[in-house]
Image (cartoon, rainbow, N blue to C red; front, side):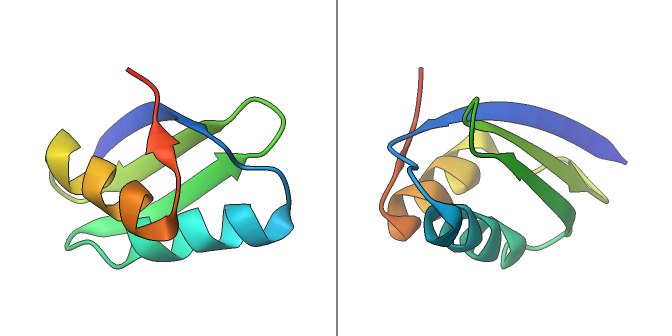
Length: 68
């Protein structure tokens, strides 16, 4: 299992959280996505490590950005 936490900017509501969770959840190997709206923290649990570029692309697809 691999667990990684990212900070996502631009989320303002429950719909934002759902969009980010859904897009990241589509990635191969991802088993859990926990999104904290208040802090922007997104914790991704996966069976095998997921490339940061894949996470960034999924968050971008949802309409938000991963803070650098």
